[in-house]
Image (cartoon, rainbow over all chains, first blue to last red; front, side):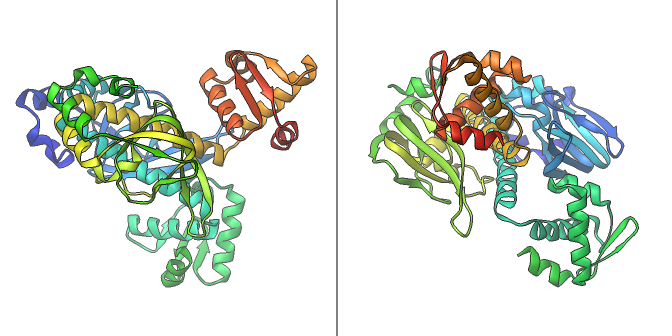
Amino acid sequence: MDFADFFPIWSTLTENERDIISRAAFDRKFPKDTVLSRGTECTGLLLIRSGQIRAYTTSEEGKEITLYRLFERDICLFSASCMLNSMQFEITLATEKDSVVTVIPAEIYKTVMTASAPLANFTNEIMASRFSDVMWLIEQIMWKSLDKRLASFLLEEAAIEGGNTLKITHEIIGNHLGSPREVVTRMLRYFASEGLVKLARGTIEIADETGLRALAG
Amino acid sequence: MDFADFFPIWSTLTENERDIISRAAFDRKFPKDTVLSRGTECTGLLLIRSGQIRAYTTSEEGKEITLYRLFERDICLFSASCMLNSMQFEITLATEKDSVVTVIPAEIYKTVMTASAPLANFTNEIMASRFSDVMWLIEQIMWKSLDKRLASFLLEEAAIEGGNTLKITHEIIGNHLGSPREVVTRMLRYFASEGLVKLARGTIEIADETGLRALAG
């Protein structure tokens, strides 16, 4: 994978700008469940070559809710939050699978972006995309009941994993949805009683995909 | 009020760029409670000369939640959402007070921004600032702890001082609660917008003690 696979505007950068970024960038491997960036740390931009990254926010008591997830070919901007003075919020980024990322140090990226209209405009598009994710989340939290959100989450997981049997704990689902484990367990039992899923130790099997889709709305 | 009051980077634009924006921009007056932009409408950037604007999102059933509010000297970006392809969400913008705004048509702004690194970078900062507002809201919605603590603290202070007008800085409150000053300031502004307190230089007046008690729980 080349920089142009991540930056559609790569060819519009000057040769010098491309050089500055290419030389400063380096690859890192992270095993599953590694915290890559927390709070106001400023690691740099992350280009996701393989794996899966979760962006989430935590309460003071350690409760979590997933903001969005990043996959192969995505760019992680908020691990370089120091680039933007107005970015005043705390996000934690962690791998959900073994991942390989290319790191572009924040100060290098910022230097090029400050002078380059194409890169600044493209960065705007990345941020607008994440903003859209977070707005979608607000609408989910505010207007959708937990049963619909849980149904959507199970379908999303099945799509990501490419199978109908999910190896995931109720606690982790709770952390994604911002809900206590007990509430997730209760809802999953209700789903099972309706024939939507089958529950076994450590797994959730989607038994009625059509029914789940109807519920998710 | 001049363009430079809204755009700190105004002097770094070329004379031609400044001309393009100045000539295309026009002033509009809107009475209180006018919807300025809804969904994917693309009116243009709004520079708020006076008044107050509320950005909110609505459910299918018409429920609303305020995302953030804009005041004199703020710039409203999401009334020009067609400028960014990745901005895929619906926000409604409405005046909360009689307002005077300068409109910069979206296509004009986009043309200049596409070629101008300073303007693109500044636009990034505006978006990051709104992103911070929305992240703050998510945390409020999800964890909602500081508001209760702050409400309790203000009531306690009023009891100690024997009056509803508190002479206290936001920084000192932050020191009491173990929270950054900025977070307290933001929360107090939210309380003020809800009519719970009135803020003045160096003082906080409790305007709705019953409301604060209900919030404190």
